[in-house]
Length: 392
Image 1 (tube, rainbow, N blue to C red):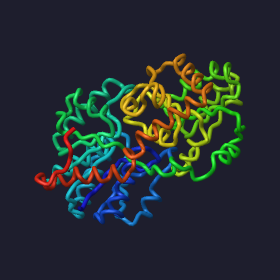
Image 2: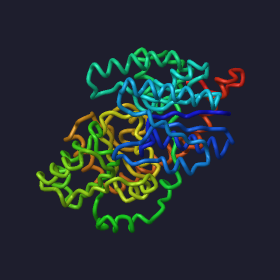
Image 3: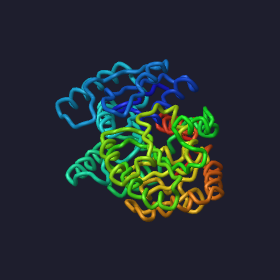
């Protein structure tokens, strides 16, 4: 197959890792002619561009493409993408993320190329200005008419798009976002060594959260829950993995609570360090208010860790309360501290939840499974009579 993948930025993030793994698998395992086109990854989130440049496939930068809405710049990006597609002549254009999703599907439609769009997270979502919400919803509805198939990273994304009137249910297929599972099954470095390097003691109960320190990611709720946890478990330590614009604000909040000694910030870490950091934790929490299906949820379960998550979007598809962790109402603080305290007090319960999660989700989240199913979608569009996609 000859496939173009188009994504707005190649920062360190779930959508970007998903896309890059798909491209690498297609190039290496299937021998596809695959091109990855992206805009510059500006910002504090880190970049996967160097990894892409080493991948051996056609990797192209589109300097005109930026995340923010800039009509003249967007028009130039659209024209430049058109020119690239006319040169490459792909069988399929596969778009990812909001801006690239709109421009990419428009360009593919103009050239008569089938387009597939992956919904990693809804472009219209909780926390947006109402005007922006409606503009994005209308833009998605417009782009949907130029899209042959939607791939949702969880059933919740399909439900949201269908409810918003973007497209009918039969236009969607759920393919969970794949990853390298082996480092989560077996950490690259021993847990004890990683904890020692972080300054953690063997008897510390480590509550970890992985996510950018940005609005809607929810670290403030973990901080608010911490006093009630530390009151019951003085050996509790909170490990916040990631960086972003809210770090100084969070550090001041923690200091005002008198809990500086109970919190560790790793700053930005490369993706290959995430497995060993998860293995250094005893409990993983995820309190984002907006997410498709956060990759850290299956990552933690595959690593054998119990997870406490707010019940947003696709979280309920992997976090089964009382079996793999606890699902809580978004923004809840007392419930969060109570759930942490239950798990902090019971190592056996933590182990049982983690074992159940590992058994249920390891195979489902292998990136090879994801890529195979994505190629099945392509094949069904290019030759419907040979379709092997199971109906939803």
